[in-house]
Image (cartoon, rainbow, N blue to C red; front, side, top):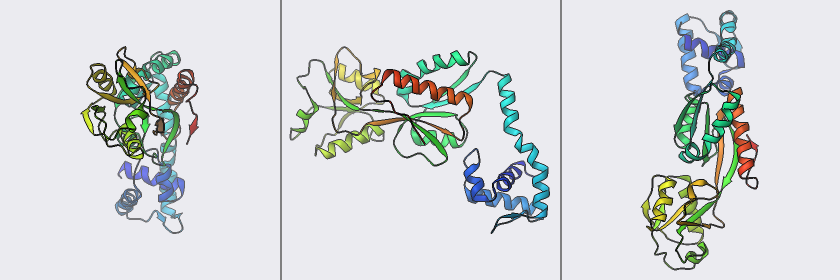
Length: 299
């Protein structure tokens, strides 16, 4: 018998149907895939394991479920028991900004709880990290939230970061509103690619003000945006309340009315003890550094 097919049948029997099994499985899989693979198990055994509508195990299904249930019931507890005997391992996916500027402080606090903690860090975008979470390739993601996450993922909103303009310290520009009053913005615009959530929100704000301001320089990171502004190459778009905008040759101008970037933590299923510690420390870090912006909205 195919062990993976047995595992799928276990979840179907345990939760009383294929659709319920899909909603409660610890990793992402589509309902048609479960149906086809359980059907292959039935074909391999030559028996029908359950009635579909309404759901009911057949006598053969009851016998097989009773046989495999102790193993799968104890699989995760055994894994946790073995993990406790070794150094804990945590896989985190996060945006470049988080990995560089904020996660090191959270990790330092985390090591006070788990001195032998082993870490795997991966950068990416929201869609990529959602897939990694559902495929169990990472344990936790901290991302700028562009879209509503899938229902199978848990979400903790951490804080909204406002959009800002960066200008050279010698610039005569005192406010962003001065730019919107011009028919054409002549200053070169330095911004992240159009696919980035920050740039999308900035473009929405420009549309609201009926301003056409095309990219002059497309930077690959917010650090480069700050550096290019400091070198006098133009005006940059970045996130306020962050370390990345701080530079002796750069001034920050607020962008009133522009939609902020929501920073959030994502994970799948019930948070493991080590993931919960990270969530608690991240929340504490946010409240300490941004008391006026911090939120605690978990879904």
